[in-house]
Amino acid sequence: MSTRFHEGRPSDSNLVRGNTSPYRAPIEDVALALDVAGLNELLDLDAFSHIDRASILLALEEFGRLAADAIAPSDRAGDLVGARFDALTYSVTTPSEYHDAYRLYVEGGWGGLPFPRDFGGGDLPSVVALAQQEIFASANMALSLNPVLTQGAIDALLNWGSIEQQMTYLPRLLTGEWTGTMNLTEPDAGSDLGEIRTLAEPCGPSEWRISGTKIFITWGEHDLASNIIHLVLARTPDAPLGTKGLSLFVVPKFLLTSDGSLGERNTVNCVAIEEKLGIHGSPTCEMFFEHAIGELVGPLHGGMRAMFTMMNAARLSIGMQGPAVGERAFQHALEYATERLQGRAYGVEAPMRSSLVEHLDVRRMLLTMSTTTQASRLLLYWVGSQTDRARHDVDRETAQSMVDLITPIAKAWSTDEGFQTASLGIQVLGGAGYVEESGMAQRLRDVRIAPIYEGTNGIQAIDLVSRKLGRDNGKWVLLLFDEIAAAIPEVFSSDDPLAVSIKSLSVALSTLRSTTEWMLERLSRRSDDALAGATSYLELFGITMGGWLMFKRATLAAATLHASRSRAVAESNFFAMEVMGRSAGLAQPIMGGADHLRMPISPLGL
Ligand SMILES: Cc1cc2nc3c(=O)[nH]c(=O)nc-3n(C[C@H](O)[C@H](O)[C@H](O)COP(=O)(O)OP(=O)(O)OC[C@H]3O[C@@H](n4cnc5c(N)ncnc54)[C@H](O)[C@@H]3O)c2cc1C
Image (cartoon, rainbow, N blue to C red; front, side, top):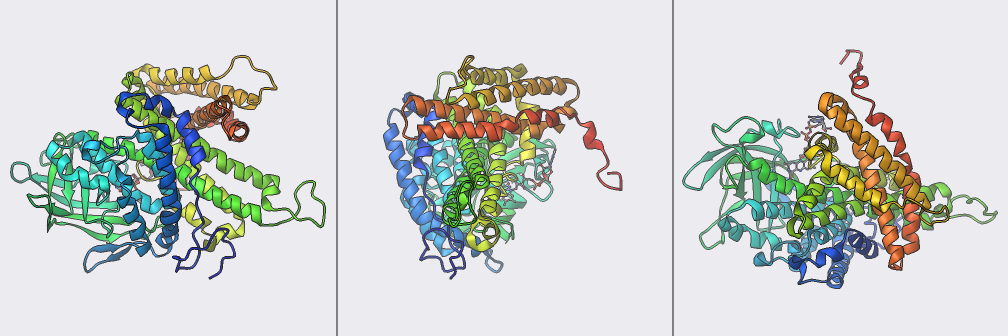
């Protein structure tokens, strides 16, 4: 087996061509990002009095070791072998490497970190679970989707399930002994869920029969768990049209007997899995429900609200795939660039040769990779900690409003940046990056789905502009801008180590304020103009939030004499110059209006 392009340790378990690039959980950066998100303040709340920062970091370190030693080595087999479907038995087989990795995850009790102790969980802040999800997705994005969907199902049942449903399903979903799925998409209902046709008919006091086809269902069928608990959006007879007529149902693969053990097989089957660009180890299933037995979760016709509980948490988890894959790509690219010799860097004399990392353009790429990864991690953790505040703090309304406002930005901006980072990873490796053997191409192929599922990034931008921005007359967005402004010193010296960050953040915030005013004004009379600029506006918002949090990180690291304080300051300035420096230029596409988008696209005049 050739290891020409592989810069890390060979893996014994790798029986397929190509290697898994090694992964090391960046615990120091994770810890600092948790601090910027306000972990210590969260731990002062009564809800978290049973846990302290040191224990949390120890747990994340331990999970990091599991990720590096057991989960990451299964990643390449997942890509090359993938999930396999057997049409005779309607079964899906995953690579053997996945079985060991998942078993260790279950045995370690890692699935229940943020959930109530009453059901076997750890009652930890959800931002800590987000950090754990990041580490898992870095190690193996395809496998990590299984717990992500399971945790979404747990959230839905915790918030909307009856006591009986919670007692029946939660303990074994928390351990990971059973897994969960989210069944929304149908052939005619993708972004437009109002078109869902799957039918739920009443049959007895609490029983329903579900019939229809769902497509693209992640981990809808597999061989890692003894039962799969499907949460399904369906329409009841005579329900109103559109999303208002949807209800949520829980449909187990195996029905349960009165003592809770597995009974008969329910009539829900996977009838095909998709061949796709990446995440080959994650089965993407077409599910056929044939009068399958289910139970209503939450109120009749309240399905969208219930499903949103699941989707909002899942949007942060999917957003996390951006920095997660970005981190893995960065570690691989840095290692490769350190070892490969090409040409001579500026100032280096013959006969010396330079490593790639000494060339300024390669440094630009590596630093862009690492700083956008840091910035999107900070953004996601920040929203994650607002989620905890919205549950447990005194000012829950403000925290929940921030979660609602920033979730679409965190999902879309972070996944777009994650894809760009993986692409830069290929660029750093040159031709070796483009060929499959190096493993870098897998990063790009895997992460490409993240801007599409869990609501496309285009839909996130529309959600931000048309539903979130103008809420309460723009009160929340203005409150957030004031908070960012308060962090920017009015007077500072040009010798200030963070002068570049301060200047760039002021410009970005001022562009964001003026484009927000324009957006709010257009929403009231020409909302098509606002929709036309929505994606660029979301990008500007993401960059500004990222720059603000990078600045906060540097300030916090400097104030606490953190070991990585000089790196944090330099990274903030780099992000300010190279990434936030683009912010002012976004004003034009944001405020360009809709008319130019109505020009003919093809000779047919479409
Ligand atoms: C690998 C994979 C895993 C998935 N996992 C799941 C899962 O577990 N459960 C599940 O239910 N679904 C899942 N999905 C489905 C996924 O959520 C949808 O593919 C996604 O929501 C987009 O829907 P669509 O594919 O029908 O695209 P469409 O809705 O047809 O969108 C196509 C394009 O048009 C744009 N567009 C659509 N409507 C509008 C509009 N009103 N305004 C402006 N632009 C618009 C979109 O942004 C997109 O760019 C998965 C998909 C994949 C590929």
